Image (cartoon, rainbow, N blue to C red; front, side, top):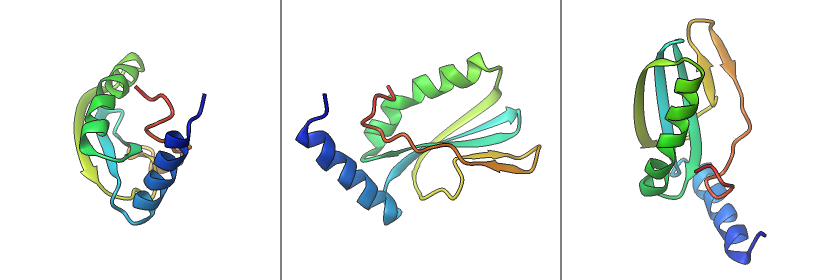
Length: 100
């Protein structure tokens, strides 16, 4: 059930993301050579809490050489497949929609 807090948090995340001030989890994998962005998050703490699930998903898909960075940014693409030269846009899943 969505609460008023959820609506306010969604609006706040959208606003700070538009300003480039939201926190994102950047994951670079060596095999396949890809960069993934997960977020946006209100804080680095929220982003760090979500990392484990993202790594587990990528490892389950066979990704190797995983490097994780939490940073403030505004990514143009959420997935960049470097060895294929592709930019793949995934839908943004805000931190409050059960990403943990």
